[in-house]
Length: 52
Image (cartoon, rainbow, N blue to C red):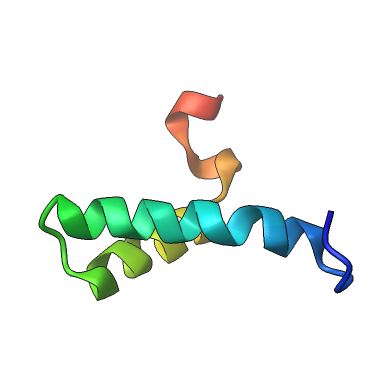
């Protein structure tokens, strides 16, 4: 775990960076990948039909 008081951020940051990089390698603009990730997070699981 991290010593800076943000262990969840330290855990998730490299995973998010890798996901963004994968999207860019797939041909999507970085800003679009980030916008979609934000949109998905804003929706939350309650609005995801597969989570019901």
